[in-house]
Length: 313
Image (cartoon, rainbow, N blue to C red; front, side, top):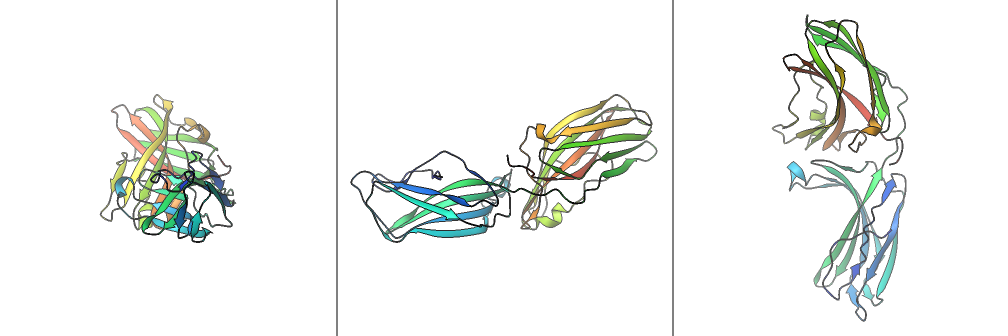
């Protein structure tokens, strides 16, 4: 591994070799590689020590949180070379971080990201340190829950519409298939069609645990705003990852509509569910059932599903 370290120092100053490769690791793997320092022929470089750092970071300095400080949940430094002088045109310094705690999966969202990076630092006399960094991607394999009850719920509009929806499970791995059915128990309004969507809701800000605990909306209400914030600077952004029509035409009492949705076929990159990570952000997924009547009024019901990673990729 040769971590890419963008940027170039002035002529005659040692420079790490830049590679454009991107490396991915499973959370239990050691992070290892080498830093290659090159210098112009005939030059030497004095330094006050060379080290490499492994950093795990929740970065909220992008998007709506621009300018806010980041939070490092993992940080470990290793000395690669004591103070001295580099004479060789090329110096190779191997490194390895063993048994590092990588408790979170890498994530790149709208307003928050989880980053793991290798940072190279060369201290120099009378000059700022020379720094380069390179992100690595970490994925966390998980086990299927031992107990996973089906989702079954009855919702409706009094004396107008009464439906029952059920899904086989609440937990799904990222390549799973969601199966279920929608049963119409009472129909006294004219429905034109019905849609099913998968939503991703990213909530970020200090004290996000309370906000993430919010419900999924009252039964069959008009859809809420996609993006919003509150007085505590907690921001929520909702993305529709996929939406498709599962029924066309007016249903009658007793009709059952089957549901089958392959998560592997979604055009967006799915991640596991993140629940109030360090009380700073959460990423949750919902199935959003929408009914549209002949007056184009839209009624919805959301149900949270929990996603987890079974395989790397």
